[in-house]
Length: 285
Ligand code: GUN
Image 1 (tube, helix red, strand yellow):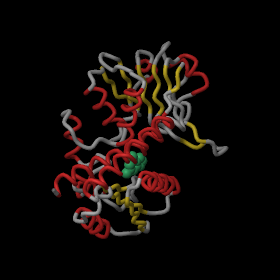
Image 2 (cartoon, protein in one colour):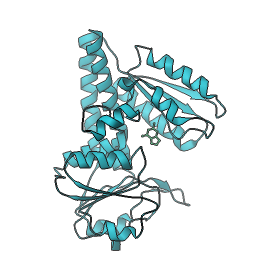
Image 3 (tube, protein in one colour):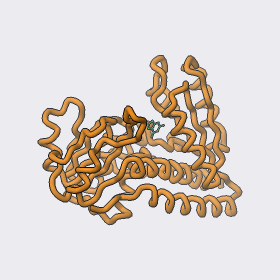
Image 4 (cartoon, helix red, strand yellow):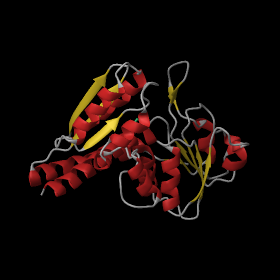
């Protein structure tokens, strides 16, 4: 069994981004800028935004967080997004999800300029991903693809089972795998007999937030396991969706959680924001 070490790879990518930021600054005096919208007091969202901000500082980006109260109006958030779309110091816009129930999330995501959509959630970028065209790709599944690349894992013809069908993770993950010629199944909460599907998988990718959803008896020998879930146990420990201790004995490669996909998500946000800044710099010329 070999660990897919997201912590190590994310550090390597951060150093590459740092170098490219320096080069961009020297070339055109541009500093990549990321603007984040955070609504309400959800501690997990606040913690993620804080980690993203610290990562921006480490690589030399400019970043600004708009902290908004839980009862903020739809119109006020829309005005902020329009301001960011028109602000040339901002290359990337990130709306931390989930948003409160009274907010129309889709409408906000569609308002973000697709050229600043570093989360890849705008339907324009979703369409480009599905049709295998260049665009912005959601950070978590993009981070998984970087891990495959780093460890020379070829996806062509592999049976991949994605567990979870969210717009943020499962669906874009499936598109990326398909674009690399994998055979892809998406399982979800209404899938009958999950084990029947996972037992056939060369690669299982799971991100649903259910502790120990994937157990040893659900995995074939030498499968590759990508754990995208993060949950907190009653004792306060962070764990993934996979029974790591037992499943790791059977797998060829496995991501730990935490320390696997999580750090890669942040590294991909940096790399997407750099890409947006590079494209914007070209346009300003
Ligand atoms: N909430 C959970 N994951 C994400 C993510 O990747 N981006 C944003 N914006 N919100 C999230």
